[in-house]
Amino acid sequence: MSIMLHGIGVARGIALGKAYLMEHGQPDIAEYTVPEYLVDTEIERYNSALDGARDQLIELRAKVPAGVPGEVTDFIDAHLLMLEDNAISRAPVKLIRRQYCNAEWALKQQRDTLVQVFEEMEDPYLRTRKDDIDHVINRIMQLLLQQENDTQELLEPEEDENNRIIVADNLSASDILLFHQQSVAGIITEHGAPNSHSAILARSLHIPTVMGAGNSHRYLQDGESLILDGNNGMILINSDPLTITHYQSLQQQQRDHQESLNKLRSQAAVTRDNITISLQANVELPGEIEIMQQAGCRDIGLYRTEFLFLNRKTLPTEEEQYENYRATVEMINGATLTIRTLDIGTDKPIPAIAEMEGADNPALGVRAIRLSLKNLDLLIPQIRAILRASAHGKIRMMVPMVTSLQEIVQIQNHIQEQKRHLDSNNVSYDPELKVGAMIETPAAALSADGFAQCLDFLSIGTNDLAQYTLAIDRTDDQVNYLFDPLHPAVLRLIHMVIKAGSHNNIPVSLCGELAGDERYTRLLLGMGLREFSMSPSALPEVKQAVLNTRLDMAKPLTEQLLATPFHDEILHLFEQLNRSSPDHS
Ligand code: PEP
Ligand code: MG
Image 1 (cartoon, rainbow, N blue to C red):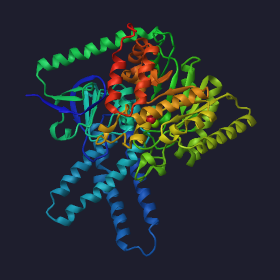
Image 2 (cartoon, protein in one colour):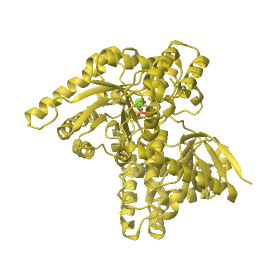
Image 3 (tube, protein in one colour):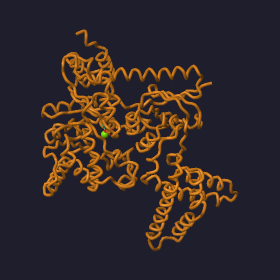
Image 4 (tube, rainbow, N blue to C red):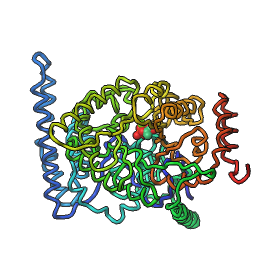
């Protein structure tokens, strides 16, 4: 008999495959085999993580202040001794050599063996030493996970990895990137919400995903056959052949539908009453540029630069960033590339940045522009790379999560200073480089007129704007039910920003997930929005919605909708707006 689990479908699509359970509470690690010629490289990786762990402990020991009880140093010494034990220093190496497994996987296997040995011990004291083993192994594991992993990049996914459906507690954006590299078929998480960066990434990468499927670990077993329906947030376990055939044909229908929408590729996004709308793409990874171009889109309205910083131990250099921005702007042949400066924080932490650690409330902490202004090692190379790349195409620079004009003044000062440096070294850049900001906090939206006077353009980040306005953590599935883009507060703030832009004659775009949801296209058009930036996969549906809209019909209904504070009435008007046919005025 087949069983069904429910969650929130955060990335559309249907996946048929086998459950692959990530362990609870353990760092999620990729498990793969390495070809024989890379075995020595993998062993070197393991040994260097081992050396790193030893260095860390020695440093820790040296820093123990005088007068601290001897047990503390004894404890560190015990960990150092464990590192030298064959069970940790040699056994994983043997596993890599014998099984061709990656270093993380070998260490995990060895950990499982050791934990079992300790758990079977009669002596309660010895049993508690299991925690020490865990600490030591986790230290090595963290170092392995932070390493730039050349072996993994060289590997093609194994054939049967393509039908893996990952089942995890929760996943970060970095994890999703890793799974994308392994071409997994789908993702299920017990926690997580549709506006988290992980969900956005899964959508962009077209990985059918269901989040918030609580207790999946209880009901699912490794290797079980699953059907994952990302459209409806459903997971079917061990389905009968009839159901499988049904979903296979649904999968095909969706592919056909996507292909038929792709026929709109060469058509401009123009409303029925002839207003041209700019549809731009949000790009998370360079690979998406091809998809956006296939959908007929030219401009990048949001280039999320975080991918350059994730899954690595060191920060990207100015040169590396410059090469990337330059290659990207050249790839889009004269169209506009809007580069967002680093937006690290919450579910996108990076190991190289210490400020990220231990914040009680990361969404309200040192995130995005705050982090860049506090940490000039991040900001200055990025500004310089953007400026230098601007000599090769149309580039705009955009700063995330601003709350006060003071931040804009600081950014502009840094830009001016770097321009002077480049001038004195005869390095070219676009002297007219446009600088804008993402309006994604209520503070910025309520003072959008000020931002509009000081900047060249604004872009509304509704994912964060809704989070901060409605006081709901965008990564927390427990409060996801409160997420409501039709909340009058959210709508009015969006409207304020659009009006501030038009009063000050600067362009305003919207690059939150709302822009890519065709149910909101008419409403946003009615509010006066003329630039939308979205995941490339959403472009065809939104273009279709633009083509089906008459602004002269959408505007009066939208005005009525914005005027009422009552949710029922808003919902009623919203449905009416979407129902109205552009062919009947
Ligand atoms: C937003 O907040 O709406 C946005 C586009 O930025 P991000 O999702 O990357 O925080
Ligand atoms: Mg944001």
